[in-house]
Length: 84
Length: 252
Image (cartoon, rainbow over all chains, first blue to last red; front, side):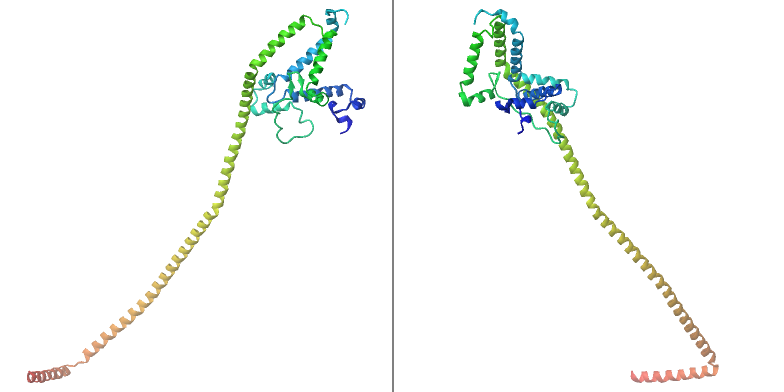
């Protein structure tokens, strides 16, 4: 279909700048994007009849990675070796 | 399985509402009614969520790498990345690593041991909810069906009214006929009585005239018999009697 209506996963690598140009970067647009992403994730992994641990474990893993990234400057001080 | 426990929180807050509404609210969190008016029932929830390997990486990643690298591609990528992070100390091993390992092992042990039990319990709760809603629906359907049957019976009864009216019409016709015949008979009797009276009157008159005439004739005849005639008739009778007795004696 047309470029602006395709999801991010269906956009080819060469078309990425063009797709980014069609994106709506206003606050409402960003909020809408966040809401759509959350709802697609929620409908795929959490809002099912027989879910498993995968739904929230991925969220927790993402949270762990994000917090590690935010605290990286502080963690860098606890390295074992000086030269890598 | 843990997701089912999270889902429990939503309906628990809405337990005051009747069951169908809670089931509807559970479905309403999906943004399906945002585009156009949906007049039919919502599609049911999918049975299983998206496939995830080791609880962390979605299956789509493995499928994405399969054409180029085969089955072991993602694992090689994971091992390479891990060694790279460790060797460059982008991931630093410190006390948090030990804590993470302990916590993860406990969690994984808990999930593996009690996961199925909790899943069965949550499934049972869901099942009861669905059964209650279904019972309400079936109850409503049954009530409506009995109402339909009663309605049909009433219609059948209304059809029978025509027979009733036919019978009543026959009754009325019979009453009219019988009263007509009764009056006809009465008329006949009255007329006959009057005619009989006239006939009796005439008979009486004739009889009276006859009697009167006979009496008058007798009276006149008796009056007309003079004593002279009486003597002559008696003498003649005696002569006749003598002659008869002589003939009778001769016969014997």
